[in-house]
Image 1 (cartoon, rainbow, N blue to C red):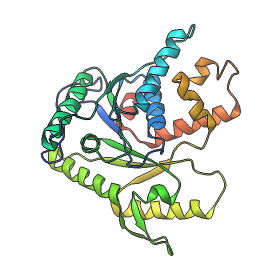
Image 2: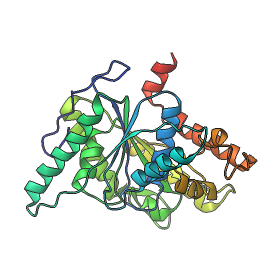
Image 3: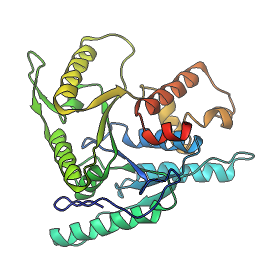
Image 4: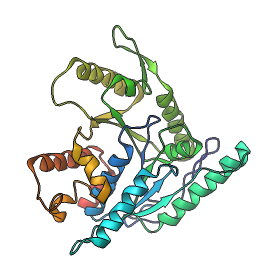
Length: 294
């Protein structure tokens, strides 16, 4: 697994697709509240329901939002009658308690590698949820990523971590902190094994109505795509349903089997939201899904 100075990619483990290691999808953004954990869980369940073996690594051991989501799912599945929900294999990697910076980084690298290798021969894909801050563990995950998904709210507050923008013309002046970190991760990855990181910006909470702000965000993202090689795709809308599902550990991909919420069946809003999730997963262009389909 990678470190920030001498990066090496894992070799141990063979997936059912015959690859040397599981495919790594990393959810990363240094800003909290962007929807990383909710997006991660919907990707996990969508892949599980396609028949892929999925593992998760939660690097935010303090909040553990993704792990709590999975725990709620396990509890709901155990209590529900005639309902067996597909489950991932989850791991949590906490920050080191060692006081020396060098020792702490070595400890965290060892913990990260151990979690990965425990999953590597059991799953086809690993989904990693990073904390909303710049940490050594997060940088390890970013360098290891095959697909990096960065959810952002459709506002210039969130875009500020990606690019410096002229307040008058809205022209991109240059990459910002997070973009620079990803650029360095891509360089380390290329040196390590010649691999590439497919970076996808996920536009969450995009308003349905046309607005000047929406148009300006679109323009900035378009310029970023040309300058730093990033793709941007629609993500999850501003829907109450996404927050309601957390307590039972459910996703939109489960609602038909679960009979909707509280046995009320699927509303048109639920159907639209489920279609939203399917479009999101399709837009990620994950190569192992195409191999399985063929």
